[in-house]
Image (cartoon, rainbow over all chains, first blue to last red; front, top):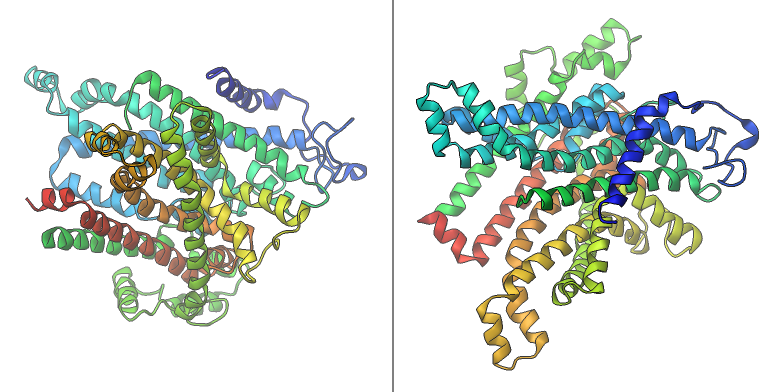
Length: 262
Length: 309
């Protein structure tokens, strides 16, 4: 139970995102007779204010949240780890500058910087990915830097150095593998926060543009019809909650399993 | 102690300076011509040049930066493109509402988190503990742009207890504060639980119990006071997250604060106002964090002595 619930949700999410395009979905198909129809017989998750099927839109939204979060976490992971590792290993003034830059990025609470960036660059999914990666790398850089600082004076590093290994080889072959467990856990939690962040930006109208659905923009559309059609808010919200919850649970389990302290 | 205060103060100033620079650069880092985005593609060349000149964007970057910091020193953040009013005036109208919301959110999170965290710690591994931690996990996973509409649905539309949105008296503050406070309550209650559990194994707790003190007195006076230290740091850090989360919460509830102003300004392409809002919120965050560190150092001699020595 402890593993099956979150793993099951995660696999559903992945499955819908990966195989959604193969399903006969019509997320933009309007049926005027079914406007605001609540879930029930013949209308599996109901219809929205324009008469579009919510299930189809939900699946399309799953693709958006899955691929955006995957992309953002990968970009942030690569950039953050590289910067953090170099900063820690090289040290000196370079490290000082990087630490200051990290501090400055951390001074923007939560989504604020992403909201400002996405707002200034204009709406669109590509800008969401850029904005979220700009704030995403910092966490990975800080973690990698701290870990490598603690590891770089170990004997095996000096041994490699004595054998004539280059800096890049030491970082990639001798240091990064030791940092991978905490990084994987950080990446798992980052997926959960990027899913919320993408939906949040789309909720604010800064992310995906109509008619394409995102869970965030579906919730925003639904808030206008809550009295007559609460399912428009409930359906994407529950999907979002389940995905975030299961990713967080998986992160917790992973941390226990890999025995990493935060 | 003084050394510690001074060094913390200076590093906070460096961050404030960096944040200001980054906010200034935002408009330059964005690809494309900001003027064209603000006025639209069909705008006249003369209008564009006029706006470019008004905003000073035709000057060299270092002159712009100098003017920007000169303005900041005099609390002059420029003029709104939309309402043509000084931005400082607009901001000062909005700050009280956001402050009210943030304080109410913090209050809500504390009255939820303390009982919950303490209960979970003293009844460790019972149903109470499990329930409290499940709530905490849910609270972390629920985004506030869903929590808000959900609360509106139940308490405003179905039960009719609170107004749907807007700012009109204490009743209108309840739902936004709960929305904002939930995530913080979730994190805080976990922290209180783990911090209390650590302290409960200490010798002085056993001594307090051996003295025959009531369990209540042991928990509240001996355990909790020592367990509070890490909790205070977390609260300072999270107050900033609260400020960030306030943007979305304010939009959900049409709360007339700085967050709503930020989004309105983005929609109106009123870039100077966007910059001013982002600057205000993040500097407030830095200041709160620095204050927290001072409070922390004041409460725990180990911190200031170690740093001094």
